Length: 420
Image (cartoon, rainbow, N blue to C red; front, side, top):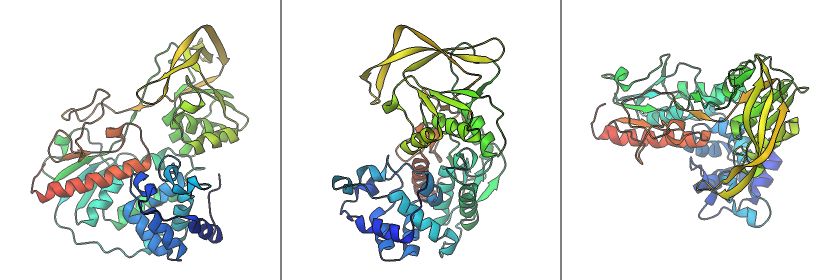
């Protein structure tokens, strides 16, 4: 889906901004990007100034310019909506990043102050934390066993986010802000004892939720994120011609679109127990999946994956929606005597992610997420956490915001002279 604005289009869009005094768009952005200010810089022709404003607020400026769900954040509250249509904020953001690169900015970093922080996980939250700490003279060591950059590098399809953008941004943050990367998996804070002044955990959700139905052990049953990583690596999945994707979130829609894109002749159908309005995927991703030809089977509850050795299909029961629950979503209930069968040769399970069972020394929630206070500090002094490992599945910009916030909390902690 083309989102690129040329200079004339960008200027016309910038002219539409009302430059609201209270800037609801800025408040709605988790990273608090100063939207009216950077749009004003575009209008005055100062693209370098616009880039500096966005970069200071959001370390993942390149990635968010491509895939941030503006309809969920800044654009959703644009005052212009009351007149005609909201400002295309993400497109203007991308216009800036397309024309001014991070390396083109003059960085004025303070000397290192001797403090050192361990960052466990090199995704958006970890990189944001490293960048923010270095801006205040603190060195970071990022522990990452996989490729640096997290989900944007490892799982988001190349059609939505190019390798050049995701990898170069992670590399630039690393090089320009002098972070060190160590290829080591950390599972306990004790492994870091004695070397660091504080710790930030940003491992994300590394395990996939399991579907509790008969047949999940049949051949040709796969999990979504493993497939996304395979596709992202450039390898072919080798999946069949009729694929059912069970789930209703971004990952389900992402993998469905990726599989359809890989083989346009393949039938791909998302099976979801609620309706279209309850689908927890970004609007752009749903629209793109539909354009590619992905089908949706709504109000369908998976009961059993059928087959002898290999998948032959999915037995479902029809659902109907009930009242709205505390999460704001409609509940669902089974419709008696409504079972139906969908023939598939492959099933992909995409019902969510969960944290791995590590860092047992820290207090956790009932869902296994790490508990933190408002400053993102965990139950252990000097140990902070953020991103999906605290929030559950969230967006890139929310993880970035956590990385920045944790860095500020760590700086306050270090000023107190405490050690891990």
